[in-house]
Length: 288
Length: 340
Image (tube, rainbow over all chains, first blue to last red; front, side, top):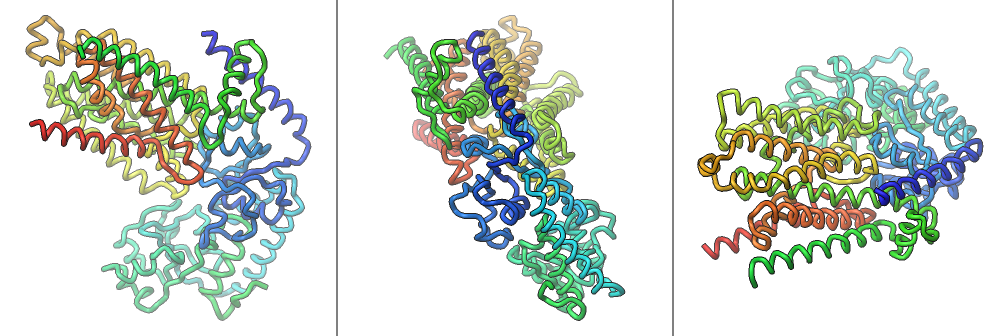
């Protein structure tokens, strides 16, 4: 019983001390920021003095996934997963986590005296815009975040002007039998890139499985896949989907995967890239 | 060597190995803590002297490492005791908590919590949903098996398999329909592990596991009688159905609590009792405590390996126990086969 209470008392005392220190510093910029979210890594790499970055996800170095390749020095620890011990060892005062991070993990993080910020609401371009601004506020770099968002807004405004009045092809996103319905970032990307999201037309919400027969019956004008997922090859070999006009006539849209999965200011570049592939007559390859 | 001497030596060895493994597991990990520093921190917590650990080390020790290592011991011990009990009840050396639908039900509950977003929003939601799933599956097994009157052991076994298969199908359906980002949380849980588990999880699991194991240990005599067979046990005056129900209920509670906090940790309930039975004998009053200690050692070491290598390679706890357990069983099978 004594053994049980004593560690508890010490832990409480530790947490109080850490919490006091944290509240004293609450007004100050966090000086040691660790990120467990790739979208945040990519934002932080652009707005944060790198000496304040004490951890990023291992995905930041992954070609075909990261939009911040080579931007974070190798001296910054990489986290392949949410390893609390390693995370605490880099002494962060703020940890950026994703919308899906386990609540139990966050509770333990709080108990260890470390604040966290969730990057959330990334299922729409408006949500992504707000999330970048929120992240900027959380890390004490609102100006940097506003700069990124201004660029994001300008790109989307130019794109909207260029696509005004254009016919919108019906685009089906395909990733190994899954598609994007309404309320998804990829659905928003399709709409913003000048297409109509077939998944949303089917009444799907979220990333959902769509059977081959259903996909065939939907007869999309274009099919959107990510590079390197072998989706294009799988579609061309598929006994039913290979018979789709979009496949037979080569109307498969293959996007760089790092843009397809971007959930931050890079989403504007993703929209631009898709718009160029869908409307090459209206949208040049290069961003303005 | 006499049986009694072998038994005593086994208990002495287990009682010595567990604290050594626990100390090693507390000291080692992705961040090493010096043993002297740990000792000073513990004595400081008891009001003697001051800790020589740095504040980061103190936080890692008390908030993360110590609860996790103790939880590993509790989970390992609990699963091993459940395995030993079920092997006696079913008179089958391959019996474990999966037969009661615990693993399948817990997985279904966990996946549901992730799919609905509870796991990321509500503290303990994943654990409680997994526990509810485990208990729901056990109740379903009980209700279905009793629907056609008093069931035989085979009836219970087959009902358990059917309910597990149904839960597995439900899990698959939910997994396929779950956001790819959320799926990773489920995969980590399904692969078994103690990442992100702290004092609250330790308290919750200990309450069920330690109390359940103590009650099962108190039932070791009826358990021995049950292992003789239903007719023999009834002939010896045992209320077979009631006793079996109590033992299975306690085993389900213990296994449900273990699975809820640690996910799927296979083979512990098979390996620990199987390895220790020849050393301490089949009687419950010896086998259950020995299995608890053996299971605790196994999971503490597996979790240590999982943590120590986490910066280089992802080795989930459940995969590690399977890596140890499966070859052990193949070897045991070969050994048994050559003797036959």
